[in-house]
Amino acid sequence: MGLSTHVLDTMHGTPAAGMAVALYRIEGDSATLLKQLVLNQDGRNPDGLLLEGEALRLGCYRLVFDVAGYYAARGVALPEPNFLGRVQIDFGIAQPEQHYHVPLLVSPWSYSSYRGS
Image (cartoon, rainbow, N blue to C red; front, side, top):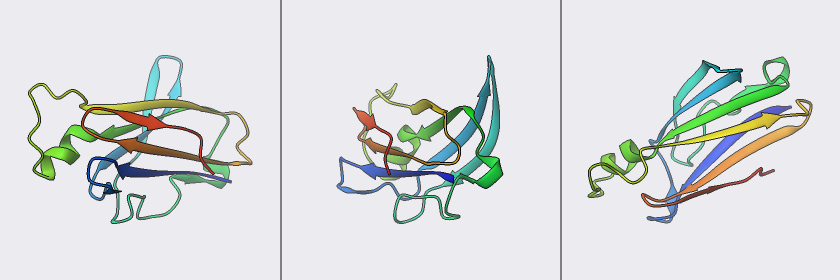
């Protein structure tokens, strides 16, 4: 069906509008960039699904979220080096006919993710 993501900024209690995200397909030790995007005002991909239909295949993927860049753009004073620079989530697609949602709850000091609906 499709792959989506949604990022919530738990420090400010808002969607992470403006955060840069990259999606990769992982095959062995190789990562192929599939898409780069900037999240919209709702903290989602402005184009809808990240992958859909035949583009979502059985296999391993990686989402990389530019957490430090996002908080720096918001004017948050961060230590150097930042505790979290980029958050990388590796996940598998076992049933491409299903919908996979990978949400991220994030602050400059912590993050959490899960398979959403």
